[in-house]
Image 1 (cartoon, rainbow, N blue to C red):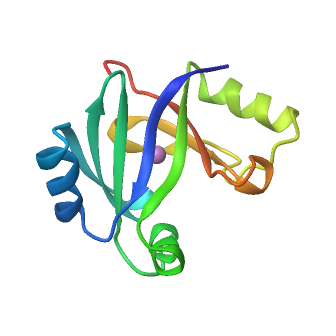
Image 2: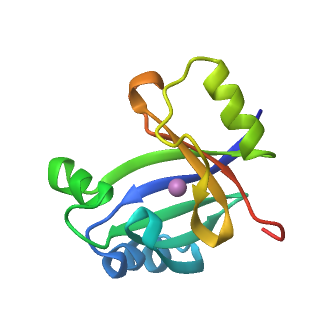
Image 3: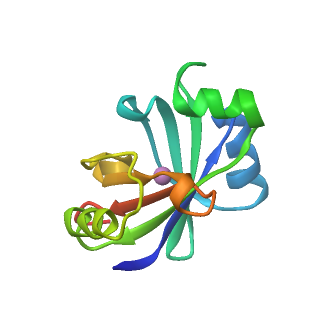
Length: 136
Ligand code: CO
């Protein structure tokens, strides 16, 4: 069902400061930057091998990533696994008894469809499943 690690989501207070690290110092290629209103973030996607690092700067303090930053500071936020069909994968997760944050897929970065699983049923790791849009 899960075919690859698609990206690691990292919460950052400042996208520009984080790009100075990931793009300029670590040498990853910036491939996409986008405001995702549905998730309350401005996001940047960098290539690392077949996968990505997804940097997330909250649009407001009361967004999920904003609350995460306030509680824990910047750092690892979620792990995202690639799936062929988000609808099938979400149904399989539900059938397996996993606690879902998203009952239905929502819009992710670069036109992807994503859903989050609650860390209470995934060993403390906020887990995202993602069906990438065609062409990516
Ligand atoms: Co993500």
